[in-house]
Amino acid sequence: MSSHVRRGSAQVADVAVLGCGIVGLSIALQLQQRGLSCLLIDPRGPAGDASFGNAGSVSVGNLFPQAVPGTIASALRGLRNPLAPLKLDWPALPHYAGWLWRFARQARWDCVEQTLTALQALNVQARQAWLDLADAVDARDLIGETGYLHVYSEDASFEANAWARGHLQAQGVAHAVLDAQQLRDLEPGIAAIARHGVLQRDSLFVRDPGAFCQRLHGRLLARGAQAMTDRATAIQVEGAGYQVRTGTGSAHVDQVVVAAGAWSTALLRPLGVRLPVAAARGYHAAYAPQADLVGRPTLWAERYLVVSPMAAGIRVTGFKEMTAPDRPARPALMQALAPEARRLFPGLGSAPQSIWSGLRPCTPDSLPILDQVPGERIFVATGHGHLGLTQGPVSAELMTARILGQSPRVPMHAYRLDRFGMRVGS
Image (tube, rainbow, N blue to C red; front, top):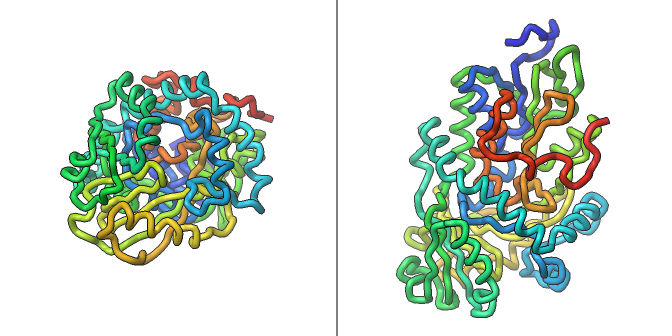
């Protein structure tokens, strides 16, 4: 424990980790294993947001940024289409308008090539990092080695995606291209509209991401971590350390890790840090368990929906809604997508039992921010977007090395705070 603890602080630790999603919890475990005491702060506890409601795929072959040439035109054409994957929360436009401009500037092939390299550097290590983490918390029972299946219902879109398959081949990502019969051999419950498929063979499947995070959180507490179920509202310099203020109290720590997802932006702004992160709300519809309906996370490429056989039942994920933190969700959006999921898997139940929504922290270039605030012992790990589950454990390994003053095994330049020229520091 540091000698710079202010007498009377509510709680003290070497490191405060703000955010108990898969990224923050993985970092906390890595730090704890290296002898640092941790304070975990999150208003909803472990997996209270996107780490709970995702499709469960550790998708090591998802190397492609959201912004590619043609993305903007396609998104504009689809704004009135209830099935289009991108939705805009128009009253929140001032919160993400600048982000959209930066996103549009990334939709060039030279930017795509750079991003592919940086994504691959993380994803190539994601599988082993996940297996190591599962072993560390005795959670292998929650991990399936099923692969991740992408299916196409239209010949034109499958052919248009040949460039992506070429990159998988060039990067050595294990995958198999399947015809319609091979798809039905692999997934007997899939409909005849599925004409082509690509199986990313090395992708893992987390059958219950929420339960995994709960188990990880429990292991941290059992090993001595402290926890506050509260929202961090401010980080202030206090002596040689930092005071983290919450809605009900404060804590003094030596270092801070900001892994608070879409809420990281508001936490860091008073410190002169402007994060290029926008809040993108994801949705899922939860159905009752149906044995043998689907064996692995299955993405319908043209609809951008995923059907996953989670431990608690079938989960259908879809849509990316640009919004702002604390804006109300629009669960009615999923009403249009549910019939499409039944088109892909006709045996799916007629109505979902519940609809969930949560915020993903997204950067314009689809790369996370893994960096340190200049001149401070405040570290930032956010912006993973739709790859937060995939990259959480490997991001933790890299950030732990950075926090401990060691050299990460991956060059970190691509994930720096200031890569969009935004202001960092006062």
